[in-house]
Image (cartoon, rainbow over all chains, first blue to last red; front, side, top):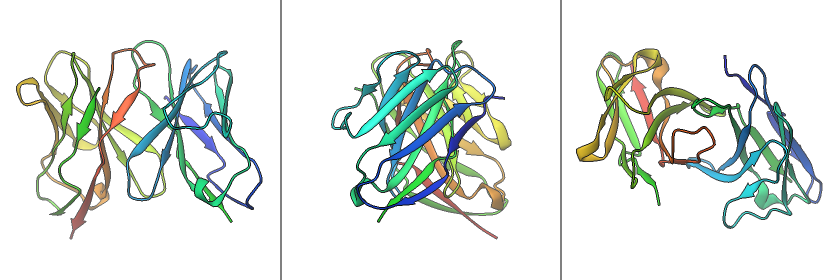
Length: 115
Length: 115
């Protein structure tokens, strides 16, 4: 149980384009989803917290206009990197939590490479 | 503010040997503690968690961790390491029992297993 699917797993695109990453909870309802960024050989840095039906809460230093987060349903959250540039290249990981004191369950991540 | 310290960046053990990965946390109230494992290019898998109760917590894959409030530690142990345990291990602390609480991760410990 508690499976989180993230898609795509790898994307390469040109500088200036926008990229959308999906995070789905497959077997539970995720009232809260989290988006992390991980640089090579480093830890996870929380970017934002999203609750279903409300605006995401961004961490300090994260540009909300660049990293658009939508949590339109209890099973889906999306992260859109707008006008992506090479410095946005990174490993992005989502996680999801349900009610009832369960821990966060993580997706397998998306490796984003901007050329 | 909560924080997590994993003092060992890299550890190498022989297959069959015992393992202990250190984790120290800083948090003003009762911490909610987690250990996650990450294989290269993948997301995080929950090994075990501590919310309350018995301070020795059993997890998956033969791992266990002991919460020691007096030492602000939550060290991960395994009596006999297998080659497949080679991965990155992250300790994390949450701000509350609720699933919407943010996690703060340590910098990770990379485990290498020699045959």
